[in-house]
Length: 89
Image 1 (cartoon, rainbow, N blue to C red):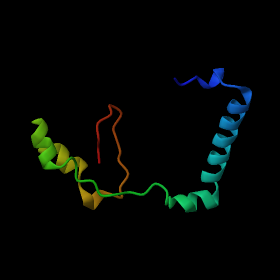
Image 2 (image 1 turned 90 degrees about the vertical axis):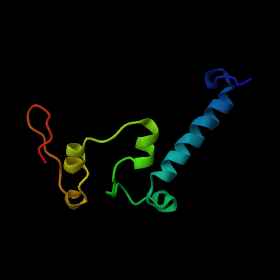
Image 3 (image 1 turned 30 degrees about the horizontal axis):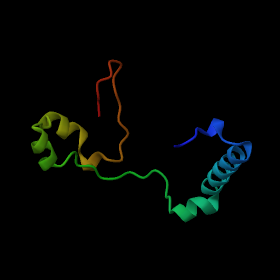
Image 4 (image 1 turned 180 degrees about the vertical axis):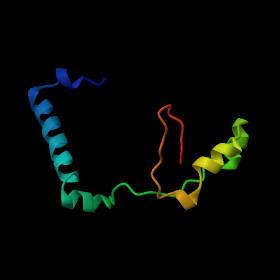
C-alpha cells in the first residue's frame, strides 16, 4: 500500500524534495540540457494525420483546409487571423 507523501516521515519528505530540486536544477542547466540532447523548439514537417488512420476512423480532411493549413512551402510563415478568428494566411 502506498502511503501519501504528506503522511511519510519528514526524512522521506525532505529527500523527495531535495531529489526533485536537484533533478530540476541539473536538467535546466546548460550541462543538463546538453545531456538530454535538447535542441529547443524546432519546426518540423507535418503532412497531417496519415491516410490509413483517417480511413480507420472514417474521417477525412476538407480539401480546402488541407490546401490552406498543410502547405510546406509556407512552413516558415507566421499565421495571421482576422478579428473573427478566421485564418487569413
